[in-house]
Image (cartoon, rainbow, N blue to C red; front, side, top):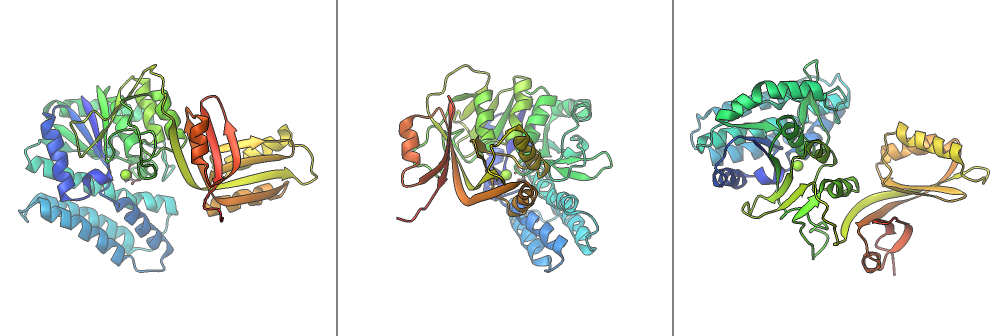
Length: 423
Ligand code: ASP
Ligand code: MG
């Protein structure tokens, strides 16, 4: 069997959903589990709705109305028969949202967020499943929450693998013998039956979980790019597509911030040696990129850009050397605020770390570190990571920019840059 994952862009309007049906037909669908994300930018819209509801300052109805209009426009374009069951089914999901919004918030934000934001995937999968059935592609809608068991770490829930695997294996293979299955990415369920989410862009990870538990022959992520490229085509004019890539290289890319694949996606597939294909949904016959176990050496430099970085320089209050005890306290502070360091450097008198800037988290960290250290920091920085770098590439990337930290290892270079410096 195979797992296909269709992200937000690949189901953003009626035309895109029709294209999904075309891809499946061209493939002579057989034993495919389809994982879908929320349509277009719905997750962002639902996030905003959750925030408004939690703050209770503004009326939530305009936001909800816009989400409804967006989905009903798509449904009306796909289902001529206004008595089709999809109208009722989608309406039921919206009623669930309205029920939440009616009362004042009683729970913590992350819990509320998951209950509301998960609706994007539920609605999307309902529409896609109904449309495929209407087009003769026989499938069964499955609620991913009946399979993916998680802890109650809302907004970033962890999978309970043994329970999840047992639930998946118990029913899905039998269903897949007769028809396709359409389910949701990104969402799971606690043992108390509350909805959780796996973190933004988590649908790829869902596809990998199903792939792993079902021992899939392959997992394919359908994207709006030709495959995995050596740089973001939105930032660089000339890019190179990889025909094949090793799991290890793809994991490195995801770790350093390449957005093409969710970082958690690769491990469950690598563990079972299941290839991951990244393919363009607008040209489904193209080969895309195959990620698998391969020894093929990469010669093309891979460039990963992260903006909105902060570089913090930490030094002792009495200008003493940075020793192991200082380092211990610094790392404990980072761990306590759940902050991932993107690159770091230690010298005699300072420890420097570069990470994604998020104001609230940054302020909490500063408060803790201020007790023991002097802090200096720069915001609005850019971090460029280059795998398999050459001096020429580094020179070109840092042209007209001030390098404020540089870290080179054998295969990876990292530059922290001040961009848009005044002439
Ligand atoms: N819809 C979710 C998001 O936008 C999950 C996903 O697309 O993978 O983050
Ligand atoms: Mg998405």
